[in-house]
Length: 228
Length: 271
Image (cartoon, rainbow over all chains, first blue to last red; front, side, top):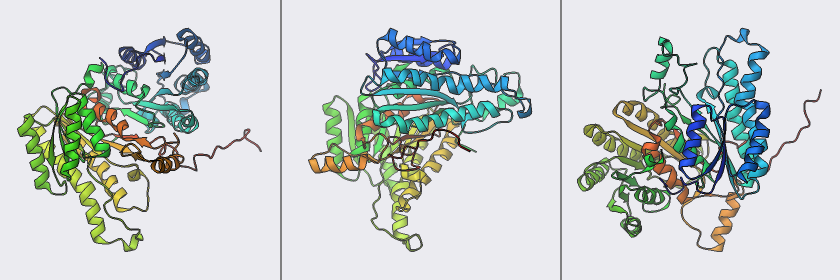
């Protein structure tokens, strides 16, 4: 189906980390909207730049970059080692930065471009034991704000989708944990989000109607962050 | 997945749709398949919006309404229900500065404050309440969308207007909380500096260019850019989104720590 301004026909897109449900949903939605999509699955953060460069060359150009990495770690702050911190920062934050660095030379060949990153409600709120994960997600939030200022003069918009409790997040909303199921009930809508809840927003953020929308964080969280 | 963006078979009310952003949103909703009640105080302008929707093959009717009068608001929603059998979507967009003055805070007059709150905040409550009552009675959910302003999030000398707009955002969050059990979603669109219509003269283009220079994307927003966002928020494509504010401001509110030309350089940490 094609809806005006939700149409990506002829656009070339890279979606990073389609091994995650959010990345797969974004790639599916881009394809449904008519984009030519290159999917990059599980990849070491240090190889992201090479993979993105390779994918952009294969596509013959690039208009849209979407990133959806997500590595959750939660432990008491005194238990955290460099072995925890490195991957959490590299996957959640640095891999998105590396992807942008590699994608920009290709995106800059066009008059405008769209970048869609992924973050979490933990990027603006905290929970016990989520210190490094929350910090990494907060890093993504302000990466978006800073790069929006830097890239706006070139016609490149950058925004992020901020996930709440999603139905595949068994590593943080364990169904056997009573407190975790209470957390889901903290959403106004009383349910975890689904992959399909992400796609249309990603398409809007990747399309030609968001030239005046940049530097913003868009929660898909069932109302989790907006009530007491 | 994108078929969820269709508004086919939905009935909507868009207040303040005689011109500008409200008109753009009404036309976008109609283009996505909704039947739209276009409301404003000025009959000529809403007649024109309806004519443009009908010329594009859409369905709409014009209904005069002063949204500061709750009886008129209730009657407007009644008109939507009697014409289209229901109301699925309420876009409470009407509002405005109304009062001109540059008073100091301690001199701000009662009447100016009350007028601006009536136009922007009470109206928002009346429209949301009237729509929600029908939606709850019918039991099939619905969508309420408010138009606020970037001024709501940052202090400024207009005072009553940003105060009312900030109140709208709080109203939206509480309404979303109270209406979620009824499957009614409530969200707010926060426009920054957006041009209300196409520029008609070179002087107008020049003024807009000068104002746009201070915005990170180096231009004002355009009326039509509100349309796709309104369609998204009105449709099932956003069915997990409630209680949220969507900012469409060219990157202004994400920055604002200096002029847009301010670009720091530093080689690294120096002792």
